[in-house]
Image (tube, rainbow, N blue to C red):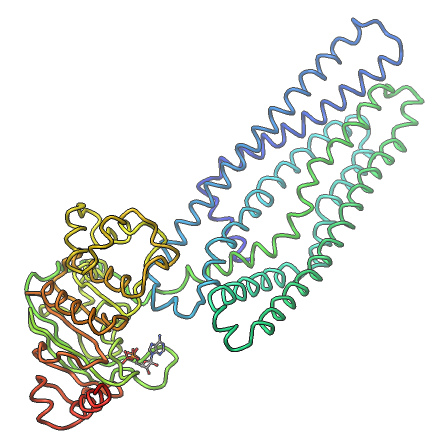
Length: 572
Ligand code: ATP
């Protein structure tokens, strides 16, 4: 219920639009009632063989209500959809704004297909809440009042019976149907999410599924989810069908009751037969207002579930928040880590356990160590994807938390092992690093990254996730982005891991050239040309076990020397 009220609370800025939609909705159903009543009046009077002049007001009524009904229906659709889409737009923006600060730390717990479902389907399904739940009950209430006014004028007993039928069709039946199919909508939504996850795994992991002979098993799981969903959908459809039928039955019951009460009055002459006929048709037409309520209550459960899934993300506290009065990014100064500690949420072992190092301004520092030693974690802390659990990390003497995270990230260029390219043109993928870059700047950056061949292809589509480019080309685009960003600090996280030895050599030289005067932190497995670093930090199980220049570390004949000899022996 709390979720429903929260969702309804979002409509507050659009309350007048919703009310307008409800009023036009009422006018539409009112025109329908008027049309049928005028027609009934006209047909009844026509049957009495009255002259045409006596039928004139009926003819005008049919014309007026007939035309008004079409125009009003159109206006009602226009206003209610306009309102719904405004609300959905607001919700989408709000959701994106809430999700952005959560990336990547807080979103790591969600699978991408799950997030996609929340962003696309869950928000879309809230359309129901606004188009079916808010305005139609208000319209139905107004119509109930109108019919009460029309019928009770002649007979309160007749009006009471009609009211009872309307309440049953408009409220009791939908609620009973919702209770009967309780949990169904929620389970259907859960199965839809499961299907989406399976479909994404199927598309993205098709190669692995085939290679490990698991494709049939995966397809079996997809079929099973589909069958379970179909069973639930059939049950929901059955309840909906029975409810529709019963609604129709109560509409007819209202007419029978009306006639039962008012036929004696017609016989006694206290009500005209023409008026009674018009009333019968008016009551029938009034049930149009209760039809939209049928599905409303039934879908509320699924809509609330969608709302819950959205609020779950929206209510998550971001790992990193901007300080109220951020410091300007220091023009000078190195990076310093003191007793830096970090443990990933849910992990028992610290990824970093008391790491201290200094990168002087313009200095070049490498971090080496076995897989899982905590190297990439240092890079993640530096760009503030996470906050340290203990110790300090400063730039120019100020803690990272004193800068605006966006400003900080603009001043640190990261080239990682996995470069993500958007499904846009190569130009747009480059402009991400520097939206104001000219064609000449793009050309220079591509040339420096050894990608002259891409110059004529700038406007070509990079493909889904950059699939139209080779792994090496994607990596060099990341380097071109780094050059375009022109940040004073550069983090290279296995930046040349996907390149062959010859290209790697060329790219390393390019990086060296483009990083002149910048502070560089390079994370690497491959111990190549290590002499170019001022300091090498050797990380093992979250601790720095050795540090110094390449020659010093070799002379030490410790962990680093062991790694170096092992690699170089293996390469010989
Ligand atoms: P590699 O060279 O293989 O990339 P690394 O030295 O960069 O390894 P990190 O990625 O920093 O190592 O990981 C350090 C430790 O933290 C590892 O034990 C890893 O399993 C763990 N870890 C990394 N990312 C997460 C995460 N998001 N959640 C939980 N644990 C994580």
